[in-house]
Image (cartoon, rainbow, N blue to C red; front, side, top):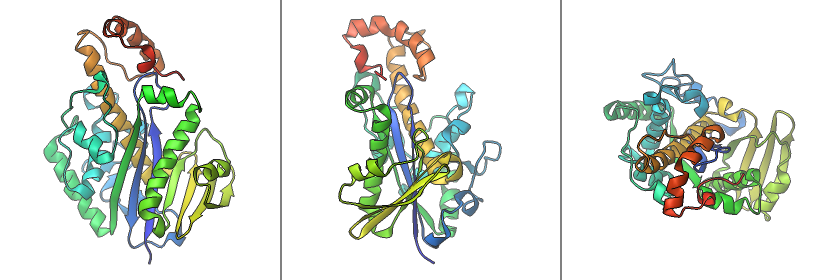
Length: 322
């Protein structure tokens, strides 16, 4: 048996008017797994601890594409996202963050310095802390039994001001790709000698990525392993380090590390939006919060325009240009 380094990358907040674009990566080390067997079914390997749906959750923890786990009930909207993210985050640190500042620090997500991102939010939001501690103990037990660890969960948060500056010279898709590749670079630096396999949701349905990968790593030898409708797969070699990257549609449904990355990105964005809404609600008491997406975002922008004018805030500091 060998060791498999198995990671996933996904994003949240690709299309909204307000709030950050968040790109996350989650990495697992499978200590008793032969990489020649291909990508493992983590839901099966950890079936006593995790599941795919909200219906199957409790005592198990639901891990899936974030859009499938977020509830419509306002008071429970983030319950499953938070539960899964904090359980896996604490599986290596052994402690649950007490607030969002601790969470941002642990996942290396920038705590933006704009006025509308100030003020900590206590955690957990939609779960009982004692239940989360039980979840964490249960998950750690089953990870240990399966000889699996989750040593890396990181999230890059690009706020509107930075987003607008970067998309002046590159497309939104290019920014998303470049940010994902920075996660790959971090994984390469830490685990490159163990040949990590990284799964990424296909960006915009494209098939060919070699040229963009070569621009990111000019010195790398890049081998095309597959380029077809089902997936695009490449092996990058940089001296003693190598990584296999796979871009495939619906990766968050097929690969648990991608699903967890989706949840991490979404939960991180939601924490930023809680701060964002709190700032404006403090100045307009009856203001309805926004998730930041275009239709409702237009309503929100109209309602906060007097506050922006009063505080001298330019729209480009707050509203995405594309």
